[in-house]
Length: 189
Image (tube, rainbow, N blue to C red; front, side, top):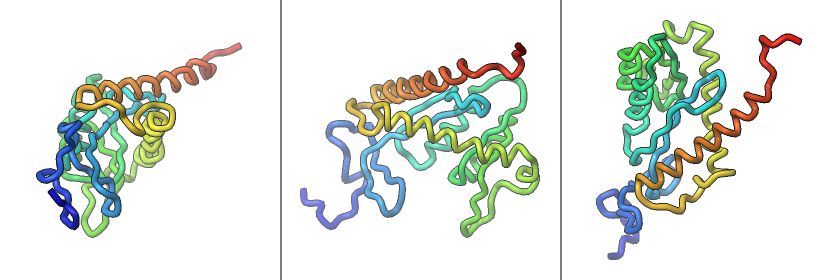
């Protein structure tokens, strides 16, 4: 078929080598390519990824995976989660609050009202979460620069997920080496 001049959609364009991958674009100016979405939950103090998931590239995949990963964290204590403004959505904010997770979501006020108000933003922990949350990008950067995520050589959700988990584990090992080498602030001598 000749698709020249027609808009690519998930119904008209399916990858023959990886039918699990869905067309996805990161911006309006970029072209859509068959993709998956990788998600990671990071512990703020050590910058270690404590949960990773790979999902088909769908519109609500980021929010759904975030809520699943947060629900899996059991510790009894109250936790917070720092995210960018793409997560400023009623489903995620309300879901976090239902899980007793404080949503430190960056406010998205582009033509709408943010779901995060002064009750959350007035605390010092909110501004700290907004600084530390950016460290999660180093895991993805390492996996692309030093790992195999820039261009994945395997096909299928299960195989790509295994590759993603392995890359995140290697990224964690790089951080663990630095954490072990640092002297403890409690050590004397």
